[in-house]
Amino acid sequence: MAELSAVVRLRPARIALLVSPRDKAAIIKFMRISACMWGDKYNPIIPVFRKRPKAWAAEFPGDVTGLEIARGYIQFFEPDAFVEAQPGLVEAVRDL
Image (cartoon, rainbow, N blue to C red; front, side, top):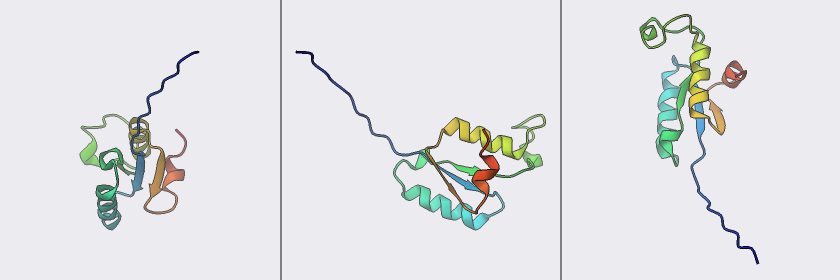
């Protein structure tokens, strides 16, 4: 008779928290929520914006838009689900 075996690994769900970088109250709220969730470091708070801030020019050289930066974060973290601080943020970054 054949013998079968399997290894099961559990990992926390990766939840992307989408927020406008200008919404300080939502950022603080997401920081609190993330700190209380299992796997908090796997739940990135991703800024969703159109125009890249000038202070980020050294980090993101060239003609990189804010939405491209947000999409890059999403591709890096590969979230299982999204939570948006305000309606429409998921649709803004949906087309990967």
